[in-house]
Length: 76
Image 1 (cartoon, one colour):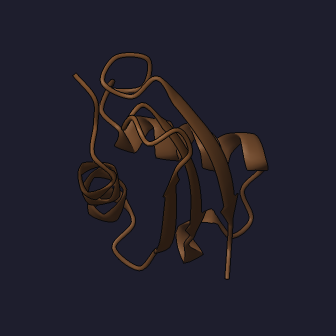
Image 2 (cartoon, rainbow, N blue to C red):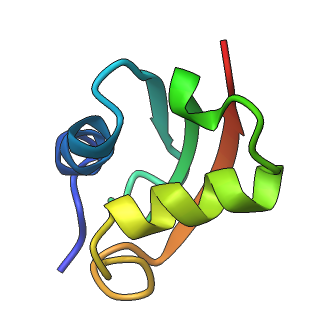
């Protein structure tokens, strides 16, 4: 079972309401996405920590419903 781009955005938006989110379905299969998340919540955090927070927002779906996510994060 794949995850839609809308569902992916919903999970991220719940954790980062102020975020600018851009999602591209890389393979057209709902399993491989590239995602850019820009949020004030990332200010002062390492890139690793920023990515950890996004993966945490996905509530365990990474590796299950969502197979691959090329993630870019930053503060505004």
